Image 1: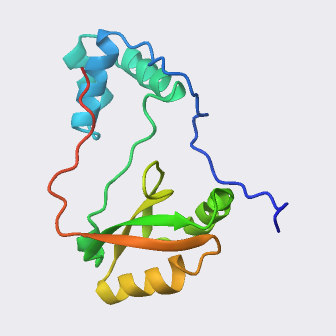
Image 2: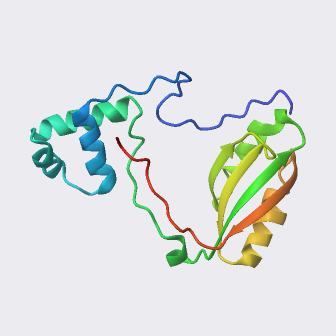
Length: 171
């Protein structure tokens, strides 16, 4: 089992580890401000706001997707509207650092885990989870997460309210 290779799905854009930001001009930034403010805005409306053609907007957006500035578009579902009343953040302690890939691969199989971060500090992994109730949360923790080989313990912080969530400002 120690020699078994675990493949963790990667983002569609390959990771780069340099700190050089993408080369964006003023038009790119204006486009980003418009589409992050309203993901359903038509490209022709963006073109009118920017004073360029719809084809130019399409090309610019596609280029920003290709270089990883834009990582997709999505409809955001309200968890409470589909029956998920409890949100929590869980710090995960690993038995050893070498368990990371296997633990993450198992966590990906748990649909209630919606975010997973590799962190510094107290926890090796910090996850965000939604549950239908406190009882459901207890089940996910005790029967799913804490049963994953390689996890030594967890600490749970229940969110009382998501006060705000926003995109980074485009400057």
